[in-house]
Each structure stands twice: as structure tokens, then as C-alpha cells.
Image (cartoon, rainbow, N blue to C red; front, side, top):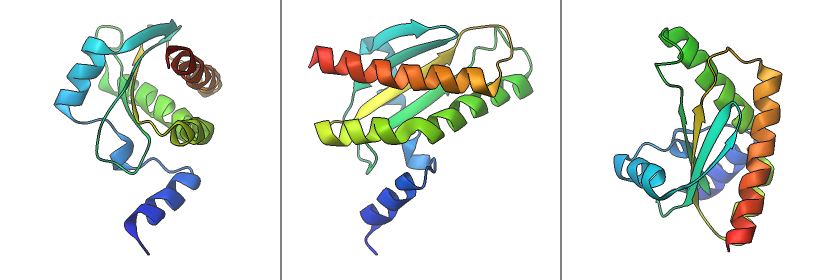
Length: 140
């Protein structure tokens, strides 16, 4: 089985692979310097059309400031919640990106100082992914 079809089938199974994480220092710097921002409290979102070598149409990074949550356990839990809700709701977003033939880097920064519920995070992520699609359609 070719590598790309394997990864595509993984994407259809709602997995979150290592290649879907934004880890390049250059890409991260570019994302936060030249990316487009919007705020959907409690998550601040920055996104940019990107060029990277991956079979996936989007890469994401999740950040929770140490200033708001001193304990690493709390920061990691919030990051896990955001990644999980993204993983479950990314399929429609990926369909849009592949139809437009673009690749995108997205950053999620959690800005509140209260521990969220999974249902709240999931509803916000769904709204955020829809808003990114509409903003991209307007900007293109």
C-alpha cells in the first residue's frame, strides 16, 4: 500500500498523526509573525497559508500560557482537550482545504484562566474551523 493512501485512510479514521503537528521553528515563527488572528474566547487563533512537506492539508500547534496555569498537568490537560476536539472535527475542514488545494498552519492559544469542559472546547473548535474557512474564502 502506498504511503500517501495509508495516511489518507488514517485521516478518514479521525486519527491525529505526528505529521499533523506544527513543529518547524521556522514555520511557527512565520505563523505568529505574518498570520491572521481572530479571537473566539477562550481560544485565540492564528492561521496562515503555508508551504510544507506533508500529505495532510493542515498542521496545528496548541499553546497554553504558563502565566495562566502554573501546573503543567493543567496546561497539558487543556492542550489534550483542544487536540481531541480538533481531531474529531477536522474532516470537514480537511475536505475544504483539499478541494481548494491549499495547505494551512493553524495555532490555538488558550487565553482564559479557568479550566474548560470538553463540550465547551469542542463547540468552540467547531466554530473556529468554520470561521477559518469563511475568512479564507473572503481573503482569496
